[in-house]
Length: 572
Image 1 (cartoon, rainbow, N blue to C red):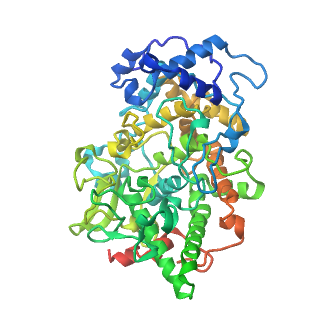
Image 2 (image 1 turned 180 degrees about the vertical axis):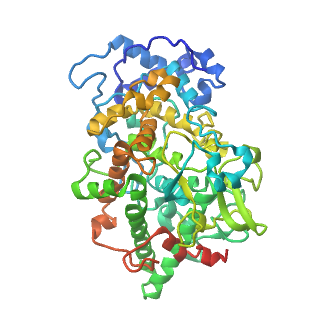
Image 3 (image 1 turned 90 degrees about the vertical axis):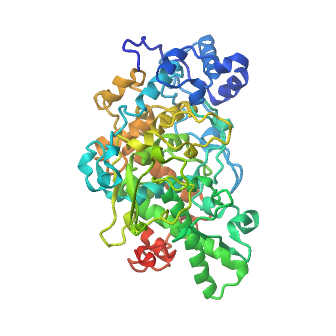
């Protein structure tokens, strides 16, 4: 628990530049890497430095350097603790048109939200713990069906009538298409110079296509390399899997849960269906793949700009950015700002329901209802939750729950606020990346989000709002957060700030002025900076594939219909 009589916070010391963090990482050696001055306090809440991946030596070395160099809250040029970064930090160091690049910053002249020490880490963990302030306290004991049919059982977790349940998972799919952090460690201050984004920072579906048939032949059929491999899960489609049951996909994160795995399979089938249309027009095999991929990408980009982004940020914000330009995301080449990757875009975690109806008749003829994650079933070959990485006949998606097919079956997701569905406070370990050798760390997703603010030195929400000329939330609006974590008074982590802003200024229906502009400008900017996107090549283009809305319109339900996975194709 947080000390009821916490010491007076020290004045905010000078934030270290990314270049200095590089040097500090080299200085932190030997025993420094494992020393924590408040180990006992962290141990009291069940987690130590190794458990969160926080190297005490790096923190200690940073503090020693700060004391030696001086600091404080001086009112000199640029205000207290301002950083000056190389221009390369704003643009990112993109390694080529389709290669790994570095992350970037939107607010490179602003300090991190707080100085890193064990007290800060303790308070962030307390804030994000199961049963804590951020936990919606959903009554999981009533079961997955009642959590859907009786929303009054979760008064802290209201439904969003404007977004369908599938919006959440499509948002996750979009994230995996543009960002994959290949170098940082949870809770460890990391230099942008050492960051690696393994995705292309474009909405180009490289998480589906990989490097194409020549560079990623394992994704494509040997007898027809222009077509994706697709397999059966027993009743309906499943992504290809190897002998160990691991998904053979361009990005393994697209098998993290049953729903995103279903989206991945739907895009594989969508490509194959569009390929047949292209071939039927007499296009030879040499051109068929490239033409199909462009059609698939452009319809996908249309969905982003016309269906999903307006749901995320509001139609007014989208229209303003398109009409008046981007104010804050202005790189010369595509890159992913850490304020987007670590904070603003993680608003989607607030949308997740505690349970879903995966399909209508897949569970021995009955609907398959399940919690999104259920620790009691972790490790089973066919768990009773929606975790990914498993193949069984009932593990397919009935899309009428997730997207609107005008049949009355679609369900909503949750509103954007600071209360997160209870199952997300105990993630399955398989959902946590560990390939870089770092400790698993906390299983609470909110805790992990907060510790990522330490990783990248994200500025506070108040600083971001001021920099953007947006209304700054009053202290009273954040008093409950500050009561649990006094170190955050006036310096709210950007992720929490964005959630509270949406709750107060947009009724949780979409993001507010800060979160909405960050997400909106990055999405639109990535499309405008991509020389192959339809916004760059043919801004007046409209969809050409069949749709329920008629010529020139296209929605996710249309994509699923063409892919052959819509309810009418299932017969259920």
